[in-house]
Length: 452
Image 1 (cartoon, one colour):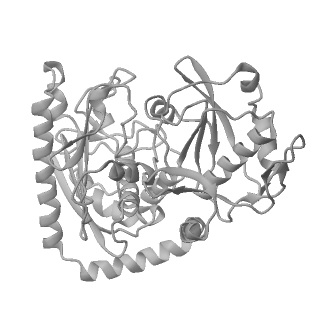
Image 2: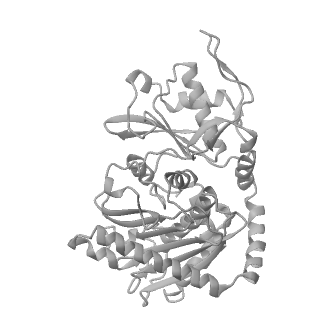
Image 3: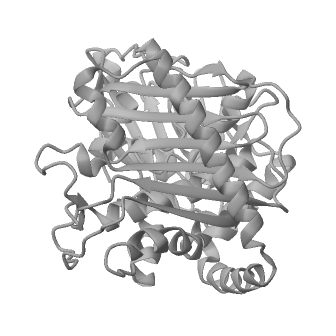
């Protein structure tokens, strides 16, 4: 499917390579070498479970564009033919274009859902000088170098476990569902609610202090004070086996960026180092990386969001939700239960992925603490999906907190029960509303497949 408006927005402001995003300054499809570059990049992204290839951008994310004679070769049929001729199994890619800095740049969207690794079906040799660009049977994979920089390279034996894990997760969704139920039942018999509650609330309190310090350094304008009372979601993620790293290094941010699945166009724990607006770039304070978005977005709507990453592995997020940012609805009147559930799915799925990516022990658990505020007087209204109906149930309390223990090893397909536990205390404030499990599982599928 073509780029969504939200994904397109992010690529306009955020263009740094990750395991699911590759940048190429030039790929000339008229040459064998250029065709091989396209095939290698697409294969590597697909074997990593899909992603996006941006062409006409430097490694730093700057748009450099393509000559018109090269750009004219980028048609859906031509790109798909090149991929199909040299790939087994066959996959369907999507060609789109991104207008950036007055350049029209090709975007190749590579599907997710790898079950069998894609490999080179037919070799590719340059007849003019005999250079072999592709060999039959070669497998390419997106991987991380020692310093956390992502790249596409020939598959190595050290990549085997990661590739196998990706394929297993896509093939074994039903098996995973069964294992998830068993695992969750076992966890409930062993968890300590008091300890989890204390950890979660303590981390949320810490985050409040960090947020207040940021606002003192970058105060809200008078006409933005209302954002402090708007519908807001706060998240604190605390691994029970913290990392021993002591300093907030750039490598830590590299690993966060590379392991972030970027399920939406404006993902949680977004790496904004490449943003033009320097005020939105991460900075080190109180032994952690802080990022504050205190500005108007590209569409004119106000933004108030803070992210924090600590060397211990703690992750924090504070975001004013969209229900109060759309001028089509009066502020403070609605909460979209589908959109909110989507955000919680994204937080848990991306949070566990990031924890694994930065090196947190997969045999341990993490405490996900959620706090929502600005609830009083709102009613449930699925304004993002006109086909969905929810009774006009209203909230009287102004805030809700939920604490959920999640195994760090949890795959994206396994998060439904944890999402249900996270949102239950919130939705209960709306006259006892319960989100059906089917809706949550459907949302998990949509988020993980990037199809919202």
